[in-house]
Length: 197
Image (cartoon, rainbow, N blue to C red; front, side):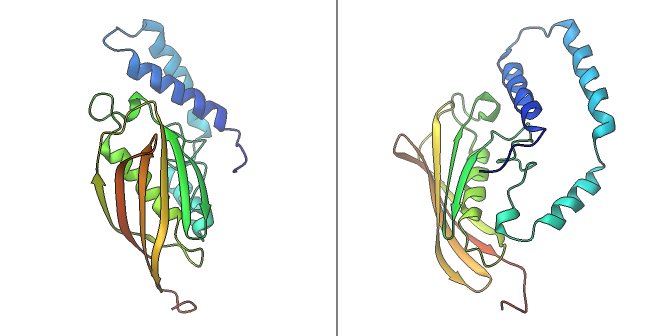
């Protein structure tokens, strides 16, 4: 389990705020809300590094599969307010993720958006690859078998099927209460490495 960062709590408060905004419906926002949000932005602005610096920092630390999950990850980043966040456990050759997604991730009414399910599958399959090098998604095919309900515990499982040098084929699925709602198969390919190839 990753250690918490100083930004985990503010990120969770922003997730809670997002959920409330999405559920506010057609009600008019209270007039004082805009001022409070502007104040928050002004407090954060001097702390924010330029995006290029943040990207360069992430590139410098992403040397292996183990460092691909980070605090800013859009799915597992506890310091990222748009992350659900997803709880993930990885082993060499398999991975499992768990999530419970609310209205912010809705596609059809009451169901999780298919694009969000694709992101969950992509991320979890990537975590199931062997640890010898970092590989990245080349192809991903998804079969949506049933609607995936909101506010329900989802389990995403993935496993490596076959490895050949820089390539690994993976498969996985999303289940809700034991029912498979989506299934995926994909190919991950790593950059050329003369020491490994």
